[in-house]
Length: 251
Image 1: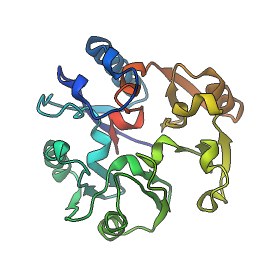
Image 2 (image 1 turned 45 degrees about the vertical axis):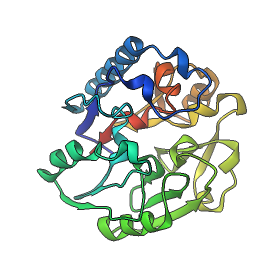
Image 3 (image 1 turned 180 degrees about the vertical axis):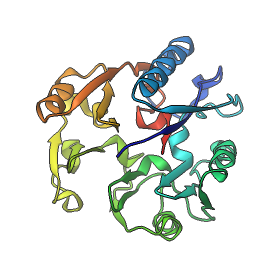
Image 4 (image 1 turned 90 degrees about the vertical axis):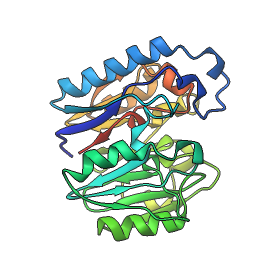
């Protein structure tokens, strides 16, 4: 899929308050996180993306993970309802941007749904039913975007995109846990090595796959499948349970 725009938000000084149980969270380097975010944004611009940079909002430690706040698909935008009350309000600035460009519909309680659970395909969506997204949220997503939504349930995981990424050309990058899932039976699957599980979250944008730099074996698997790979350093976002797709909303 080709994209023209990306909504992003710079990490703020409260990033170390992010919602994460990663063992290295206490060593988070906010200055390095900002540098990595700048490099990420630069890569998107080099791929022809025009950035819409939201002002930093230090009330929300996880505010840089804008993907969770909205799903944009074709001519519609669905504003999500984040699972954790500490994140409520992150979606407001995103909604104001999207209202000027799309028909916008907002998720209603008691449903919760986060963009990190929604995989976009050419003619349908796959929505994870996870720790953060409910079946009611998936139903509202389908109604709002008027497109088929296939659900994949695993309430033990945080977000589906931590385990499955669509690379284009009918190809999924997946962890071993989901390699044989029936929802993915019609796709070619590239299996992430056990010790590089974090690399399953990859961002396919305008003919290139952005991948976490620290996982060379998974990068090689994707290259051998015929994709161009650009490694991006994401060490500080990994400490916040975040990854490449989390940092933008593409449309």
